[in-house]
Image (cartoon, rainbow, N blue to C red; front, side, top):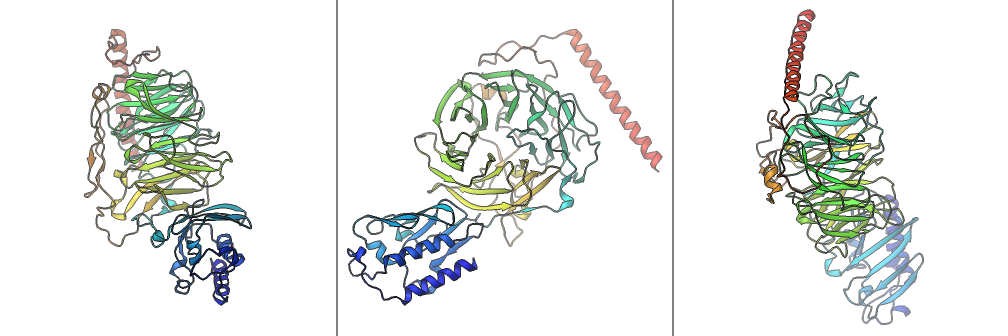
Length: 600
């Protein structure tokens, strides 16, 4: 920054000392002073070449009083690097060129248009290609966009508040590997003889015992896990063993490893890599496998109710429900994103090649039904884009970020309109604000750390610390630990900030599974965080345990077929298992009492 300021001062001092005269190339300018063209281009090239690239905040050259008499009119924004918000003012004669001209410069070009029309400069400097988009003079004063989230910053917790000595899974799969709610944090871990994940109460920080209980019912590595949004004690998992399992965790966490799920959902012929609960309907769970099939389950009945086996010709990369759960969007290896109505088995809209690169694309629904995507360009540059499904012809905005190779995983907060980008192998979290005004996706800032992340969990809004103005919290997976990171808006007052915390999605479902399957749509039920949110006690998940028919899912879209018949032998076996579990629980209680007596 110091070198940049010094160089700029020397260049501008030289310009001020010049005798201004009408230049030969600017002979169309009337009644305006000019400067030599080489000096003009030298000014532009010097500023661009020395402009700091990094999280330096906004740089406002028009705030320097000495420049006001020499410079005026045109704001310049670096589109290639959103972290550099550069407002630079050029010499007045530039705005008075009567005929558009293409002026060659060293490493770039300058296109001048008449009057206050937009102008475009392309310049290669400091070994990087920077595209400079100029805005009209009437807009130059509003350089820094007003936003209450401009100063959001991320901060990791202290070492004693991390979860240490955890062997995070080494599986090469682009999922989060971590899921969190106001009660528990769950992480996929390394395990011998099959797949497993660990569930910890949020308060159980520090170094963990090597004998920490696990959830280990899968026979293959676990690929994805997700907490139920309507029951903080229920979690679903997908695995390489082609099955989906739903588990119930008691309040207080696990006291011993569990291998018996509430229900096992079998229907995929290849590994299950994506799990996603419906946002508003109770007991509706979506799974996507490497067999290119999406199955929607009614967990309460333990059966598949919708099977989409012809919508995707190749592997599915991501699935995201919209706000009310009436639609979901997907990205696929065939380089298409699709908006699907599952109840009608209909593709509502699709876009071919939202990003030109061959690497995976991730999609997520954001505000007003728009779709946010992350992907790669032909030159393997990471990109983000915003799309309107009503008109997929052209992106609302498309921005290039960097040349890293990790797939960017987006997390969206509908209350603030902020989307967070976390890439596996990255050591940073970028965040953008999505608004209704162009360019729609506005860069805010970036949290950086030294160690790269292997996965990331995102806390629902009802689990945040409201009195600290925390608007998001991430759980970053390292190789051997999990580190919470709080995203905070700096405020002087510790009172409830209504502008930061509008009513948010609560834990109660808006409808049951049968209502949704019957065609009903409903927005999530909202709650106020003004008095804080206290997680409720464990709710019972009503499911028919362990009687899922072994045959594959039904290939129809009706949920009215007859249920499972009752088998007396099976009922007797189930009752015996229940009694055995009760006996074991009683024995555990007595052993704990004896251990306490011995310790005294």
